[in-house]
Image (tube, rainbow, N blue to C red; front, side):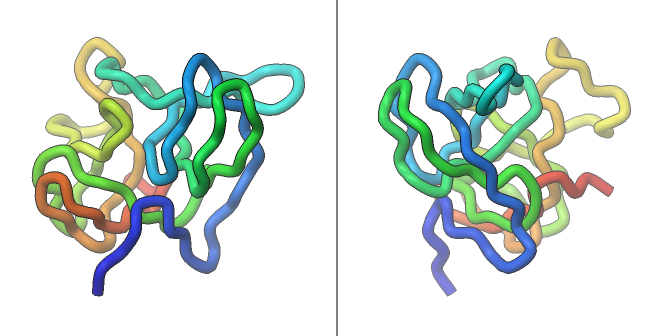
Length: 134
């Protein structure tokens, strides 16, 4: 079965976010920054800093939109993300986290995004359970 990046499933928690700096494409992995109103969201960069969310709709620059912050959601893989792998976010996509998440710091690589429940080959779409890392 083919999935579309940004597709979400029952049990997912959706929140409103504000795009920060540039427009956001549906399905991109985002890094959230807390604010006094809605969290600011930007496509995650190479640093792989968390907390993460996944956009479920396109969001114009400085506009408001929705993103999954917990639960199952479809994402595009950056490299092969096998089923059961702990993945992080990098340049708007999911990437396998090479080290146990307890030892991760932003300088060591991406922070954990979640666990793949439907694996994906490089540049294809799989399903990650956002927030589940055990």
